[in-house]
Image (cartoon, rainbow, N blue to C red; front, side, top):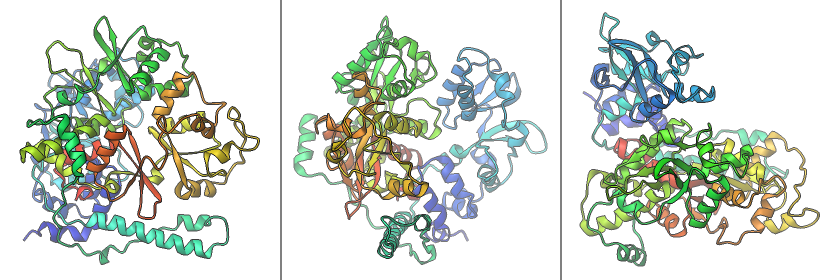
Length: 609
């Protein structure tokens, strides 16, 4: 007799915890599945007796490319495929499997977007041979999970072979395994309990260490000490009924007064509310950034004779600032380079219809963020509602606003589509569950150069870096004495232990974000002669929110977080615990990824239970 979901979950809470702690992706789920308890989780997902043939994508339905394809064609095919893979077929002969890893290697090698690349990709170092990815189609699905999640393997896709032959009959990947389960599975709320308990135990241990230490900060050995959680002692209780995200009446009324729609919220509705910034290919980067700053947008559509040639985003500007690109570089030239986040050939793949739901857009952005191909994951394009109108930009913050609209619409209508159900369910997730943990966010100090802060943020591929205490404890203190605004002080090199301690425990005094990069570029400031403190001193609280102005409690729901972001036009919030300490950062993209994962996986992951 197969165990029920509650009976099956408790023996492998650690696997659940692994998924909960990291950003959710299909591979995370498969790693958890293959971590010694694959069969139990397969039973939970209703796939206990499944074979590879039950979840694979048949050859006739799988994306395919002919030898001679270009990098541009490869990217378009990968972005259109949920599994991010395409068979390379010469007639009926299958020559290989092209994946995201191939696209990343092509960009690293700066291969031309318009030339045949298959011969180069087929011989790239470390590329697995087709036979090394093979598995019989009649094999147990648990065998495929173990092969996909093997620590020594970098294979993310398998090709299913007809038993006893070398004929390829399908492709199987983590996405296929997860999407095969179409219905929600009830699981108890163990993972959040484990995570919170782990943090509380960690703090208690830290307080004990601090009491015993006489130094200025804990020793390196105490920092590296792991606080173990005895999972066997954590009892899985019956899942309590979820509380709906509740807004104060005056806020809800303000949202309903502005738009009392009784229909489903679509992308067309969202993008129609704000004008989309536009520039032409003849604009310089400096002109384009001025347009973004004046319109308070984070991206602009690039046009040439009325035709869309790409999109310039805040991440393009950050890259241009760090790379020392001339202020007068033309947009058309920038879009042809390797740092462009949304060049023209990516426009079709990143454009959604006006009738699509915000859950559809969130799922697409989530896939882009997980894949890490290097293109934009904060912005997409949407067809305008009226035929013939130009494309409009949809940002992650726009989707967060759409969550509020969906909640307001549901309050009127009382029912909605499955995508709206996913929005409501995701809105009830807590900030702590969706945030990036503080240890995973880049940091800088008040006396660092602004250029160093931008470089740190760019290298970490993040749009926010925390300003931690490292000497002065305020902006004013950092500017006192012999440190003028225009001079960067040489600092003593800190030990690795000191750096780690400051990053994980130092007081957070504020943030530097990609919005600062836009403003700095607009002012023609590279940041090499300006300190972080000097930069902040020159901005008022309307231009740059303080740490207190952008803080939110860890137990707050994503619905409330989205409302704060929407009202204050903020893309990043500092997450604080009950003691007022910063424990993480929540971005608009984090909210989008929570919704995207909720929509794709029907909340079956312990991360969202």
